[in-house]
Length: 235
Image (cartoon, rainbow, N blue to C red; front, side, top):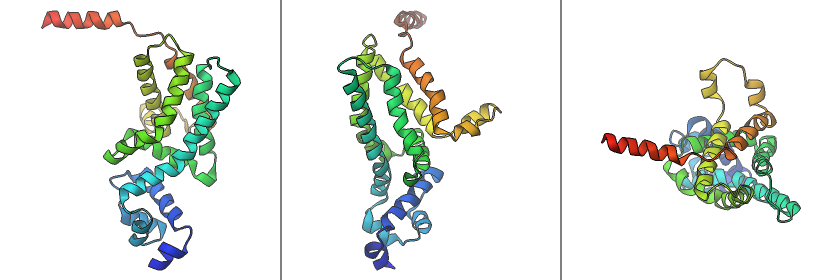
């Protein structure tokens, strides 16, 4: 069994990754043990050690095998848009749609098991373990830098610090949406399952919401200053 797991079965590594991906999505990173993963994958613990070395490296590989191609596609789409614009600023809707549509294509690709991975990604942002917090920024560094630069060019009136805040809220909304609609089910009885399981429908609702926040009027700093002044006088 050891020899089959580690040397002769070419799909052993993928089976482990597929099993880990589903279990991390369903149970969380801390609650999922290596024994749970090996049982689901039909391999022994030696196979995990052989292919990955540790649970932390397994988690990293689970993300990198999907995020690497996904983020490369996002960069390629932005490259094409900027080439077509020939130096002109892009429309913010174009930029956000390019970012989101790559995820839609992943979700629609059964060969890449995109739906499960996107739910896992949403969980990673909502409930990141210490190790995930450490390596996830590296996965997104190039993409965030490029898309932030494109948005800064599209919205020159928005100060850099404010743009960072708005990107923070955008990624939060995307992560929540990827994680599912459980909270919304608790808040209301409106049936959303038909659209919630349709990536194009989700983006159709999400995109104008994100663009609205991104292009909203700048916050009134005078109100913040007055509130601080009032508190200092009370103190």
